[in-house]
Image (cartoon, rainbow, N blue to C red; front, side, top):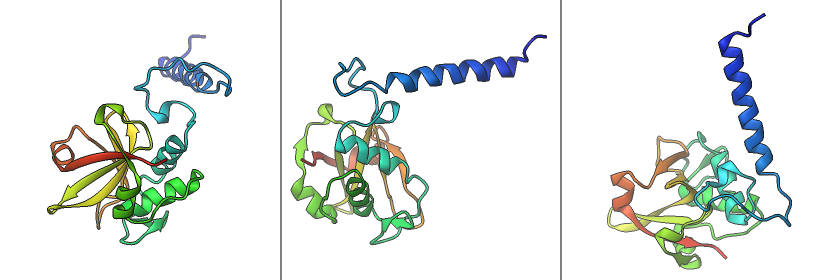
Length: 167
């Protein structure tokens, strides 16, 4: 009996996915052989920042809620606070406090979990979490939900002020 083409495609895709998952299961004493530009979503998160980025990505689709810091609703700094707290690190709650606490990071040195600060309406007023591959997760504004955006988009590229890393 000949397998249906859809079945063979699914079986091959599952085999490839399984191999990729196994590649990320190396122990703590192993040498990292993945290129630096691989996003945190493609391997097991190792740093607090990578864990926070992975937690934030799991919140995609959650509603925006001013002052919110839980899966029932997030504002931008609430998403950062929630994600890092659940990754094992206590961080400030407001965008201004995060700005003051985070060490500046050059754009070409961004790592998953770094914070991205944006200026809207003439002032620094928004924060997101870098997830790799020029993308970040954030809670954008009222009426929208937690989403992933690209730093390549003109809107965000023009509003971007700086990146910061929480130590």
